[in-house]
Length: 63
Image (tube, rainbow, N blue to C red; front, top):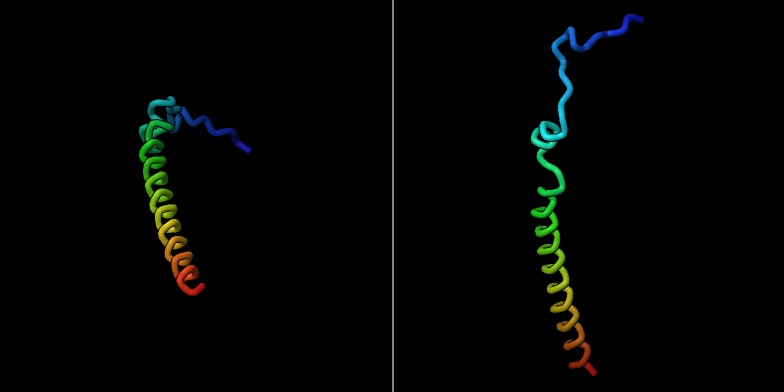
């Protein structure tokens, strides 16, 4: 098999800054995602609490 020399084909290596820019960022971009996840979890917990209070109220009314 013939070994390809990528430099002859115009292929260049990328540094870390270029990789982060092309791939959409690094850990600094994760803060927005973490904030969104936190908001969703807060909504779920709030909904579960209200549902549990309603169910317990109905059960208490039946007793």
